[in-house]
Length: 284
Length: 104
Image (cartoon, rainbow over all chains, first blue to last red; front, side, top):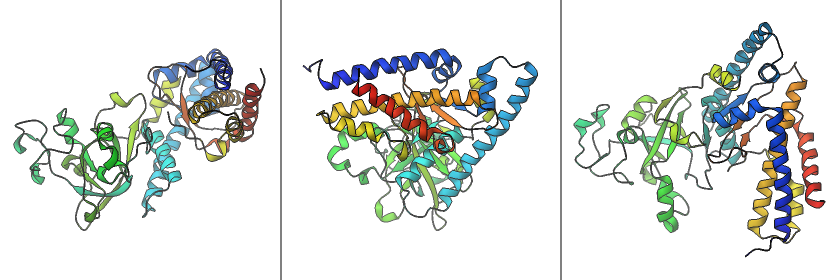
């Protein structure tokens, strides 16, 4: 049992007291912000004018209207800039992305789509986040599944076996799945039994900078092999939506983990740039 | 919990202080994370105060609620902190917390 009077506990106790005071003061001074943080997974506070209008509460209605217009314009501009920043960075990146660049991309894309993305989740990562996509086939979703029961994109056929994680939990997971090179994750061979549950059907963002299209997908299979020169594989529906092609005209995309308290609520499939006006109303 | 601090916003003085106190790695990491979170809250508070007092500039800050089971813990991402007077404020808050740790 640890000594309650150890330096650790003394420091912890001091920090906790100060922490509680800071939270209390923030709640008292800016209840709107705290409520918004509680109720919304992502809240963007877009500047002095908006916060004055949202938190001040004393301005006339005419003034508030003017402030809201300014806020929307500023936020739309910023949201578009975030996406453009990510796009420019990726289109000019041939090699692996640095840690700093990945953080910046995560930040830009999180803001642009109003979700939380990261390349490093609980110290778990992919072997790469930026790479070429190969065209995958449909996978068996459940026992007795067959190609004719897949409604869309049946031209690419069906793989002869199940994916690396076995049968899917539902049809949407297979519809928007990717294959990643799990076998190339540095500690995979030693820790695969504990790592596998983490990666199994985990939600990820797949972002194609060429057309700014993005999909929330699952990690549904392992591969492709290193010798292929590709780093990821995409389901028929995913490749079709992102306008990505295999073969000589290879397509590259960015893959990031989806994170945040909104994780369970985010549906699989295409996502669009966050409507900035929603961000505004979420805090007012 | 993931912190997206800019390198310049790492509380190095606190890290140094903790490293000289014979703490285990786990204890040090826990206190360090707690400290960073406290700094974060104070920064958000300062930021909001700053916004309240200004009307001629527009800044941006994102707050991401990352914890499902806690109302008092939240994280934020910001790469634009260098455009607001946070650098000085960060140093000031770090000193404040350091003094809390050192003194009663």
